[in-house]
Length: 228
Image 1: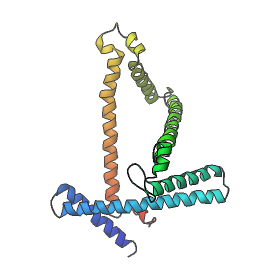
Image 2: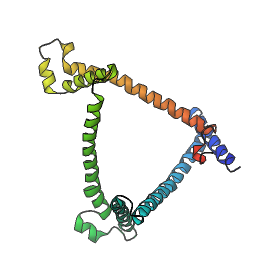
Image 3: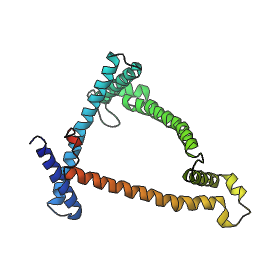
C-alpha cells in the first residue's frame, strides 16, 4: 500500500490531465485547473525543501573543512544576506516585516535586496556567461577538427555560416552570381537545414517526454518512489 497509493494517485492525475486536453469541458477543465493549483503549492514546498537541503549540504562542507570549503561558506553567507534583506525589507513594491526600509533605500537608491541583485548578482551572471564563451570556443575547436566525414561537413558548414555573417565574406563573393554569395548561402543554411534539424530535435524531445510521462502514469517508471 505504501507504493500502490502514490502510483494510483499519479495514474489518476495523469489521466485527468490528458482527458482535460481532449475534452475541454466541465468537470475535466475544472479538475485540471485544481490539479495545476495543487502542483504550484507542492512546487513551493519543494523549493523550500531544496533550499534547506542546499543549506545543509554547504554547512556540512564548512564544518568538515572539505576541499574549497571557503566557497561553501560564501554560499551560506550570500544565502543568509539575501534571505534576511528580502524578509525584513521586501523586494520591488512588496513590503517586508520592517516595511520598505525607506531610510536604507534612500541611502543606496533602492531596496537592499534589489540593490544586491542588480549591482552584484547580475554582474556575476554576466561574468560567468562571458567565461562560457571561452569554453564554447574550446569545444568548437575540438569539434571542428576534420577527422571524419561528419566533422568535415560540420567544419565546412560552420565556416560558410561564419563568413556569411561578416563583411569579408560578402566582399569575397560580391563578383559571383547571387546564389553563390556567402550571405545568401549562410541564410539558406540557417533557414532550411538548420531549422529542419532544430524541429527534428524538438519533435524527438516531445516524443521522449510523452514516453516518460506514459511510463510514470502506467507505473513502469518508479524511480521517484525511491527505486522501488
